[in-house]
Length: 516
Ligand SMILES: Nc1ncnc2c1ncn2[C@@H]1O[C@H](COP(=O)(O)OP(=O)(O)OP(=O)(O)O)[C@@H](O)[C@H]1O
Ligand SMILES: O=P(O)(O)OC[C@H]1O[C@](O)(CO)[C@@H](O)[C@@H]1O
Ligand SMILES: [Mg+2]
Image (tube, rainbow, N blue to C red):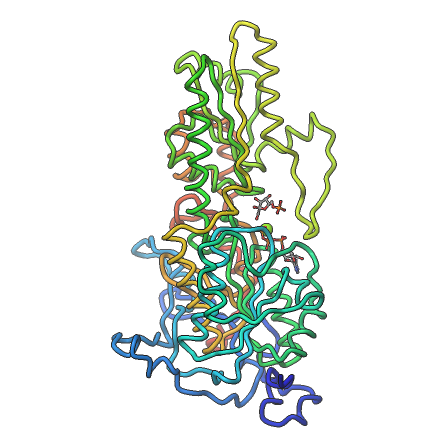
């Protein structure tokens, strides 16, 4: 393999490989922001030509592909962008936009020149294999790219493990399996070693599938690649079962996980309603964000109480959980509680000795809130003596993420993967491929990594949940006002997502038009 094919200049003249790359004026990776009339802002993504001069372009091979040549306007117009907010006021600014994903007229790689690599990092999520499959097939069938490496075992696989060759044949039916055929890991991100490996192997397109931590790692890789002047497109594909990645509509595998959670909730409901004063407790994933618990609750309608990390609750006294459980049992004879793994951690730490351990990636390891709350409820009713009850605790944690993705997630994964490939072939880099308001876009890494997505408990979606379960909000009017005061003003958000458009404005600097 030619180890120089991923150098900006080495592609043309091997002698230049040892020299410093020629950079143009945008060599530092400041955000690329374009402004237009009526408050239009494009938060653009980096391009290889930002730092590699005189790169040759080639006609997109898709123009000769019979499947695509019949499509009117198949190629995306260079000025197409997608608004982050679709609800607007008549006098409001047009706001932040992202570059629309899709194939471009010109590409910056010849098929034979491409050496792609795919890696999966972080926890499992339904759909990982589908994304891998569609990256391989997209590269192969749409662009004629034959060389695709699978990096084994997450980031550390770049420098500590073997790679495998991925072909359309070898990935043909992997989408029917849960997990990731490449394996995954936490920790082990060593930017320099990873980029050394990218350089040594002649990799010039890197597809990095993973959650918030992974995207931070991808951003570091992009910066190092850029610093070294390598012609390497670094592309993130957002994966998170917790739906905690901001900006995007939702993450792939989320619907599958919510659907699978229904089975656990159904079981808890059947168990609970079959005995006198039956209580079913189901613990679902959600380290810092309670989206799975919230959507699983809304979908099921059998849940009487949903507890998530974003909504603090308390057990004893008026308005507390125990009071509500007693009331529900008196009214209905049974109840179901869904609790996200990150809920009530402050309460658990009070009663269980906190170990404050971290996993290999630095994520806080949580106490088992499901077991804890089940025991607390049992103790409460044992003390009460007047109300015998039966509690069944179900923990389907890993079952909801280790399954293959459902049909709609498969389609979603396919579009994500194909968009990622189109972007890399067109020379874009340093971006996450993501769905914004139903459209595929390229989002700069800093927008993905600057914060986590959380359920906003003063938003309509949480209100819908409260009205469907009739559970207490556990919040006083004072709390709600404080919560609202702490938020950035927002009027155009998808329900249940944090406002985030303001955050970035503090960080970005305009580069176009001059003087902006
Ligand atoms: N700030 C960071 N800089 C560089 N690499 C990071 C950073 N944070 C995490 N990583 C790396 O990213 C990989 C995945 O991180 P992590 O285990 O936090 O999972 P994740 O991508 O957030 O996915 P999920 O939380 O959904 O399972 C790990 O290999 C970790 O070392
Ligand atoms: O046990 P593992 O593999 O670290 O994964 C658990 C974590 O992964 C997540 O699903 C995020 O991917 C969290 O909800 C959960 O805390
Ligand atoms: Mg994470």
